[in-house]
Amino acid sequence: MSLRKAILKSFNSGDYTATIQLTGSYKVYLEGTPVARNLPAAEMALGRKVAVIFFDEHNPKEAVVVAVYT
Image (cartoon, rainbow, N blue to C red; front, side):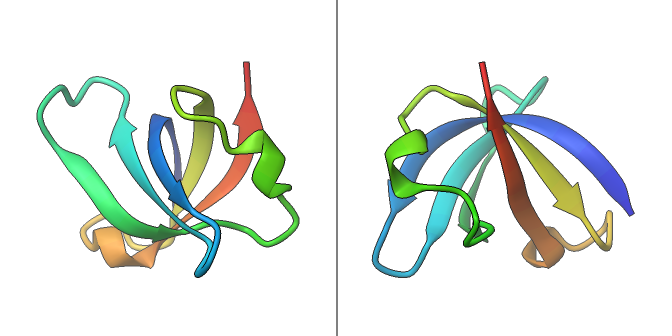
C-alpha cells in the first residue's frame, strides 16, 4: 500500500469518481478513480491537490482518493 499526491482534473458527482494526474507524471491521467464518500462534492474543485491510496501499486484500479488539500 502506498500514499501518493495528485492533482484533480475532473470529478463526476454522479458515481463519485475522479480523473487525477499523479504528481511527477505530466502525461498520464488516471480516469474513473473512486473518491471516498466522506469528501464533500463541493470540495472537489478542479486543480485541487488530492491524496490517493494505492492498495496495489501495480494496479491503478486499486486506488482511492482519500483527501483534498491546498
